[in-house]
Image (tube, rainbow, N blue to C red; front, side):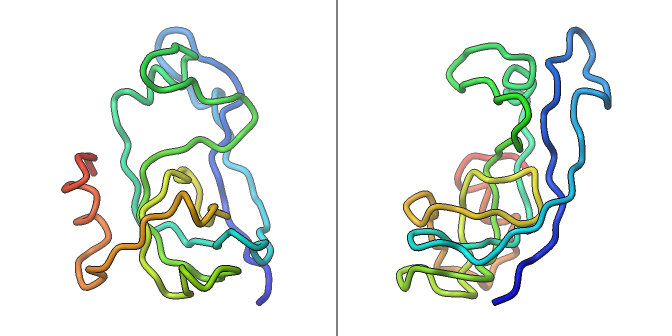
Length: 132
């Protein structure tokens, strides 16, 4: 399977006061085929929540701060587009934490396969308690 190009949001600095556009950067990336134990996921919808402001600002609460110069994370629903693991086949709808990007390489043990893929992707986040 060929690589895919995509975009991801990377945290570049910790804002003080109101966040500004300079704190994040939209970066072009190319993802190859997943290694064993990973799947490549096309992200369809993610949750954006108030607690993320603390993670951006570096405040340690019940969730660790986002690391600088890395893509941010969020609860996300996506479709597997490449798989190196038979337990999560291509086409599976999954929940994972690798949001803030169009495509992600996700460890299989960090994916929850969703059995009701007849629902809209956003409909899966609400029952988990995540706003959309």
